[in-house]
Image 1 (spheres, rainbow, N blue to C red):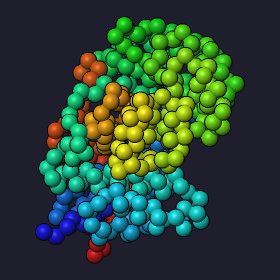
Image 2 (image 1 turned 45 degrees about the horizontal axis):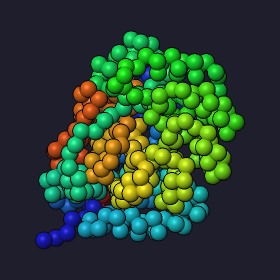
Image 3 (image 1 turned 90 degrees about the vertical axis):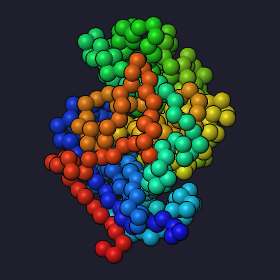
Image 4 (image 1 turned 60 degrees about the vertical axis):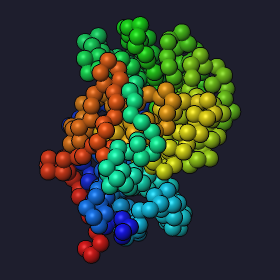
Length: 379
């Protein structure tokens, strides 16, 4: 039988210019973008991936251009019998561009999203869900509402509960003390079976982080995420971790296996993003190593339902007690990227459909579709 090979790649840039504002320590989301990849083989099988392009919004267009002009042409015609080897090969081939352009992040993101799409395609071609192809089984995953303002009202909290959430990650890292006042008030509203985490988005310097950690010491938090930037010195991270009453989480901004392994020394919860580094080929082995070391794997996901579904399937395959991140902010781009179940009483189980079980509606993208790039054999 002829081996499956890459015959066509579509890149879709979706943009919403009027989203509900999401304030983080690094800035406010005034636009939301999503960059989706659809890969097809010569038999018509297809798979979906998502390339990280969360902030700033114009980054999605740059990465789409990389797909169209750089990575896509290189990928066409390649056999899909060894997907991890393809990522290794392409990364090596792109080293000259990485050096000249100085863009290791965007290159890693494009390769990660492409890798995810290839795994989805392979699972669909076999007619099995991705978690099964990766050696896992479907199981209930505890999901948490992410991107939650620390100043939300009791009614807004009840709204998240009505959506099925029983775990909440609140934004932190702001410079004003009132944000911590709000956080303390909001966490006090949680019921006994509900849990909370905070994400500082690298917003504090070490001195501010020490003050904040002392202030929140008595709060019942599952973790404190990215209190300082991943570029800070290891000794600064170690000192903060020693002073913290809560586990530390991070990983979405780490680039490369060596960076993750170094961070094992101060992180308790490891959070790679499948569309930002590594894809399935590298994140799944990393997740299993994380668990072997007695740490916790909780994938980062703050984009479309494609990225969310991929995170859920890899979490099922990896095992452990990790939580599934779900952006709780209104975002029409999620709906366009395919249906994904909301949690029921805090938990959800991934679909048993082939692949990731999510199919974006290409016909409904409408005015949100800002760019559609196609790379195809014979075009």
